[in-house]
Image (cartoon, rainbow, N blue to C red; front, side, top):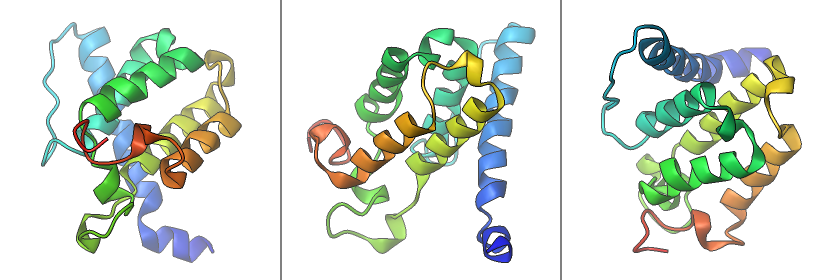
Length: 148
């Protein structure tokens, strides 16, 4: 199991996302800098880093309501490609990527390290993850608002 986990690079990806978010937060909170976040294509890492940065900077996003607002704002409204990334419909297999799952795992890492800072826990994050893939609700369907 451990060699498979290591070979997948999963933990390196989670660390990279968290490192980028911490870099962003330090630039804003410590240095007082204005920042522009744009990763390679503007779709995936950008949402991860901006969402985690907001979560670290503003305690509102560490409440249940705030977290739902954050997902709506930074993922759903900004057009994260849920359909492509989560393979909801027949599409290009090269587009499948666990971007939102990485975000949720990054948040989970923070909730494990600082449980008192969060109103939600692992069960809440797992419930969200389940509904991303269940397609039970329309929130996570499609690649943009028009698709929904």
